[in-house]
Length: 323
Image 1 (spheres, helix red, strand yellow):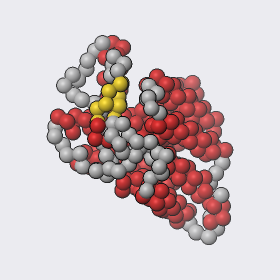
Image 2 (cartoon, rainbow, N blue to C red):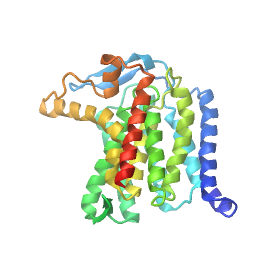
Image 3 (cartoon, rainbow, N blue to C red):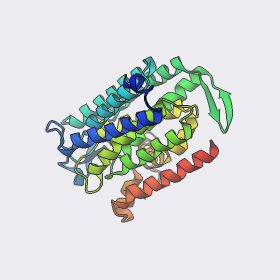
Image 4 (tube, rainbow, N blue to C red):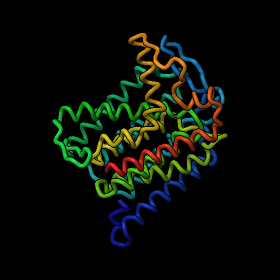
């Protein structure tokens, strides 16, 4: 919308900077005094392998959560206003809105929806995203500098796995103040710097998310006042996977989100092994790994997001060398 008006008056990088800046300012103002209808957190609740729901982080109890509803809506509005809009972009915007909405409804629910319901919803939206991508793009990928034609059916399966995994590992990592937001900022900036040529629209879209996340982190750094909830973390995971596909280098996701994969993904693997194969792998390690650092290694909470963010900077640098 505004892009077509401003494109003749200023360079595109200025437009995108304005978009990210507006996202930052609007989010800052909206989170300064959070809306009264936003839910209060009841502690970090997880489902044990035997199906019980337990609270494992009572420190978040009573804090305003679900603020992902706020910054995701701001992000989507800024994207539609300042980016070059086409049918593909609008579909992704709609899917991310639904991802945010389902996450928020779970945040606001008195009883958690449960892993099965959330997993199925994530699967449906993941399929929608991958089908949309294949409808507008081919299934060719770049791997270590070589272009490889991948069968559409295989790309579809791997793409859904990528999207679903990204949504869930990002969500699982949102357990320490500032962690999910700071690591996401590093990854999003990395995608923009490495693939801006390949993603003239979606790279800047990531920068707009950076703008709103920086505003969110002002209130989320330890000791936090607000939490993003599933409304924010799941949408961020969706966007990270989308950028990996749009870059043409989908396997680069393994480096660009390696912190999330290790921190949250290992927990998913451990629980799955216990539940389905009765194998307790890594019995002496708590996952997500940030809980291991916090509870058993004695790492200060304020240091954990810094350690994780700097680690992700290193992984993005390795990705740059490979690309």
